[in-house]
Length: 536
Ligand code: BGC
Image (tube, rainbow, N blue to C red):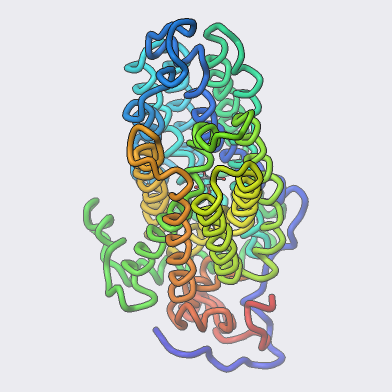
């Protein structure tokens, strides 16, 4: 199927662009699902503050606040890394399992199940006053977050209209950042309490987010692409009609449905689908050197999420408070952590516009470059003038600018792209594997960074920014060679674009035919005006 774009036929109906207008109702429906980001963000965010709360340390470490010297009044690195990373471990397995569940029981049902599992995990954490129960609760809650984080991306990418898909999925990242900010505000509000409410309030509050998401999704329609996979055309039609806010017999609905179905049939014909393991194996089929093979897409999705974690952003969010404390001259490290989370929230909406305007590739390229520069400046300032309070203030300013670059580019960009690059037969598993990769690397980084930076271990301190800066340089090169431009295309057009281009030529690709046309389901196969999708 590979080859250049077919010639454009002038004066014909543009079937590549037949689509329903985007109504407010459609927007709101798609945007609600982004709420899933709140508890992803909150759950990863609250722990940094809790680990530094006096009451928490004295309860979990059995230390007396009055008699223990300040230097010993900390959670040791090994326990800290276990408490932080166990959530990502649970999430890794949750995300992997969720891919199957989303295909068997539906996207919506899996997210609702994730909320229930999450609530159980949070209840255990809230009740805990010792390490064992806290860790078990975080592991179980992690499972729930895994379900939600991988399936919400799938669901949103599948229901959003192509023109606003990037912005809508960026909304999910926005909610992650709001969740993180809420967590640090709540931590900030309770940190000085000298009772178990100091940590129980921030932990217990999360149940509310899960409840809102579960109830909201109960009301929203299932993804029509799930019904098409199941061969349930009527349900697919009525779900799509609800999502697009159109009558079921509208020609928009008919055309979109036909195209999704034709693409599914086409992709199914290319891959064998017998047993359970065989269908997993399909994600790894083909040659890594072929831009369109399933293996290439799976490696792309998983490595993109790995790269997102390699930017080092969670170093700031997970270990920000102890790190800022370690810099010495900072009076209130909690406050600085809160500022970084506020920068994170305020910068993310820039991506809503930019991801559709300039596209995914340029956004990721510029973001990586910006982060490299900031991180090297932080590391160099530390090495050359680390004891000077003004240099420390400048370091904090550059850490904030680095967060700005992350939040407006790689934060949303990585989620948007993994929702777009997989064809329907392997999409749920591809997104699940990619999300699992995010959590795997999230976990690895959460485990190793306390050892890298803390004074009782490798004591790298702010020099660790040399490492993050170098990894962001890798992210730049990686994007340049491997990330295709998916802006403005339907998921089915992305599939075709990836067949016919390489990442570096992808932005020039023009939608020129439909799967429905090629399979003879509509009158015309090759149609469309001569614009690149980058101009759409
Ligand atoms: C990342 C998280 C990170 C968050 C920060 C997300 O996209 O996957 O690991 O904590 O962004 O905003």
